[in-house]
Image: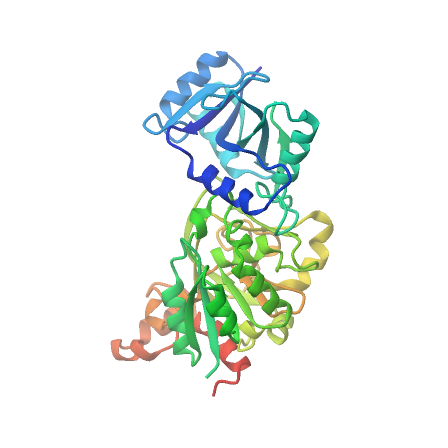
Length: 169
Length: 270
């Protein structure tokens, strides 16, 4: 069984990331990210075919990747993602729903269509770009604080009652 | 005449009909933009409504950006002072993300309106559902105060409307339920379709601790008139609709009118 992850982003600037960055600026944080990128993150558990299986199914479903407006790539451990400024230091946070009917329904659909996919989980990957040389532990703390909406003024990217947050890879 | 403020965020799309049904209920209603803070601050209303729509295009998560807007500071203050506040659909999402509902610790996010959950279905849903008020809520909540306990049909349309709470909060949230999903006859739902989005405890509308703030996912402003009820609707409301002449339909209140009638009663409108 292979676990294969892909990140999907818009070809154009992502309006969600633009709005999020503007909202963060208004929060007047001590160490705000300078840039922000958003990706749909899809994680497939495939029983055969590995990356070829995933490439094939992506070609079948424009709801996963719409080639007219989106780019995608297989993710690698500790890799930077396309479109990210190499002059910045990046941290990634993944937000997933605890109970996620979208993932469940996609898994069922792919199985019905005969793809060797045992499970699928989707989420959102937020990448935060900080000044290079900033302490990595501090970046991780800031990224996590920014990601959990405990209060109205607190983090932004997940509701802790219904969503889980983890560092990416 | 008492006055209600309807607050419009970028992406709200139900503000006009919401203001109209308030006016039809004998309440002066004015629409304020999210950045009309000074104007609203100088003209405090007797009640506030956050209408449905897609504030800030639902970016990041439905309601989360609007919840951080400065105008919500004013709504927050008025809610704590006991003014009636109603959030409809996207407005409910804003109230939840503001920490006003359930509001055990106002400002803390203690609930969620998560993505719909139904077997074999995901994403946006649109249709009619039946609701039933909780008897204790009728006494406590201005918006429910005109109700007699009977079930009534209301349209529903959303992608993220499943009330969710932490396991340790499940007991105390019961006393905050204002409206529950139910069958046509008021019977408890057996999952989908009576409970259309998988809400825990079949919650359709939730109050804060004092009962003055109500976050409801269905749209009462879309069933304010009897002519808005589909003729093939099951139950007494459908029967009324079928038995009414075209002339009668113009004046007859629909099932959703009871929410706004409740506010009018609370504000002393004759």
